[in-house]
Length: 137
Image (cartoon, rainbow, N blue to C red; front, side):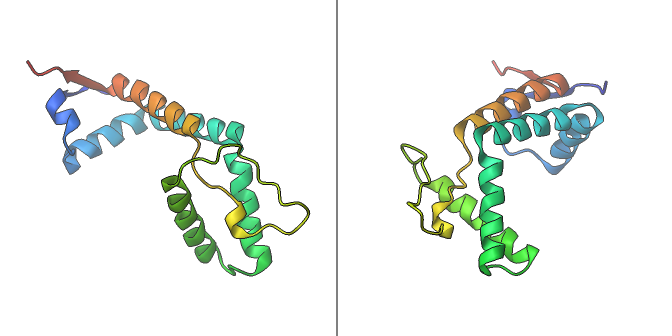
């Protein structure tokens, strides 16, 4: 295991310098930190239905002809995630269409709260393994 990265709580709350950021990335990559965070996010996105909804949205974009390349689809997906994430969650989460074809707006790509919470929790655990934060007094 790599030597812990020492910093004060003030340093931890401020924007990290590029050197400090690189040290953190290296420490997380040298162990299982990054893989654990990715695994948690992947599991939570699958369990919440986000990945299925994302796949359905991309399929819709390509089949409808709204996008004809990977780059176009990626741009549309990223824009939709940003847009949907800024809106309040829909109360019932139902995407029913009463028999008519879905429109691109019928897909909700807001990242579920449980994904964000679990990802942040796992990241915190992994950072505690590689960081030693001293509380300012």
